[in-house]
Image 1 (cartoon, helix red, strand yellow):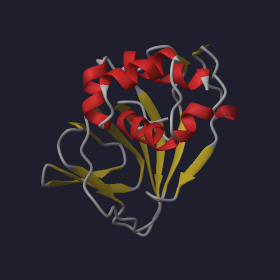
Image 2: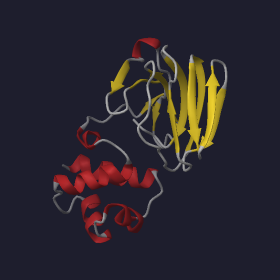
Image 3: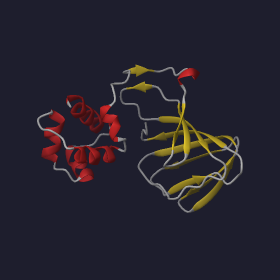
Image 4: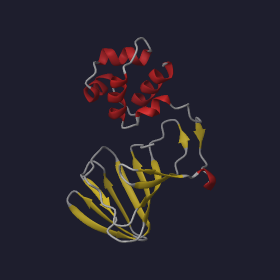
Length: 181
């Protein structure tokens, strides 16, 4: 449980949030959050879920073993594709691991004729370079067909989504903030 308290504190500091700001995001009192970060109180799973949602991390993040503090080079053998069914995308993590990292870099695979069901909007920026295929981006109600060798870069606070309008797989290089994984 102590590791969970420390991870909450570290995430809050990395994201430059005050206890008051985290309190507003979670509907948990600043005093309670302070006690949690100091390890002075126990934490219900429902409260931990609220905190995970505020930091936009999966709740399992708090139960994972500590990662290597510093890893700059990612070899091809370490680049494993994984799929997230809720968005039906394949991902390969390309980013290193070190404290206060702010960029997330990924290879994203979109299945043929894949469509998103909703617009997304969050703090940060997103940059995509199409490695293979064509991807249709909608950013702030404007549509862009981005083909192989082309890129798009936008503030993530604008409503946005993307889809693969073709019958062939599309592959993108994505560099974004904030961190996803």
